Length: 500
Image (cartoon, rainbow, N blue to C red):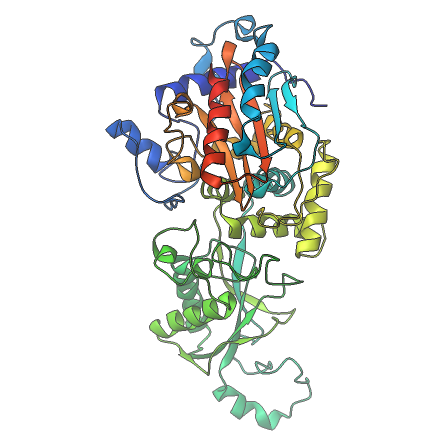
């Protein structure tokens, strides 16, 4: 059962209603100084933006989501006026029940609608049945990562060396070199390249700009040591287990490795933005190391041979480091764009924090343990990955609404990016081109929700301000749907009904 929420949450509900109804989403996003570009452009142009199904984000300094309480001193109606109408559950049964019977949603879809402020389930149909969630599982990924790591955590990519400031008294070659080298070798060592290692920390958003900054700092540190030639190594030992997702080589996800740049994308989407399918490299870590070596050469350093994979020595000195954006921004970007690479990165960071292997199996154990510790209803859940690409994932619609309600809890502000990262119906992310039909248009701008799509599987889970001004969390899961387009329209219609 969900815990009852305290009265302050109604203020958040009111703000969501006021802001979404006005069409200007003021909750913080990860780009453009706290406001999503698609929403800002719409507010200026008063017209829906077009573009790809998975538009990318624009880099900028992330900011935490602002609290809504301060703007409600004069605007908020009395709490009792925001109470859900007494007949709302019966009304939902009357409106949602027949819509759930649509053949477009398969033979037995599941549904859960919860009043976030009270925890009351207003509507439920097979809400405790574990079903394939597809990408709505990213809501669980987000809650676990934010809870375990905190919203301000950043993922580092480092460059280290075991050579002692270029003085030639350390190995710099194979790990197996002994300390008993004769002093007569010192002269030869002085001519040997200094070995440096690019150590992957699991940042799935590392791009060429980040590598360029890392190369600049590395070159500066090496020049200070009198080093002008290096042998580049790269270390991906942070992750264990299979690199390939069980789905196999696929345009929707790169091999899961602790080091990559541009998410291993082989087209222009790596240069402009991430999100959506694209051809992927079979060796993202090696490619990143090659780019890094090129950037070092551009800065006047000589490199000895191509980069080679090797674990960094334990006693290595750090030369340079670059950090990802905070986890809060990574979560928002993951949810808005349905980014599978970030999802798999975040569950492995959660596993590392828990002291478990950074693998598919370790991540599953860590995420489920984290959600269980949060006293969320995880019965029947199987979180085999963080992205939802695994068809053996199982989650209930009741757990999805519980996760959303927990993210709205005023006592858990660190989870707020789960809500602010949800795409806005008709405006952003994977919902940008949806809610255009006559029976769903009322949801445009009013609904924030995470989508999920696999062959025969369609899902939608998010929030909406419903009758009485209450913030509602909803989740709809459909399996064996005959077609993705008709299933999506049916899900849009279902959620749009919650606005009236």
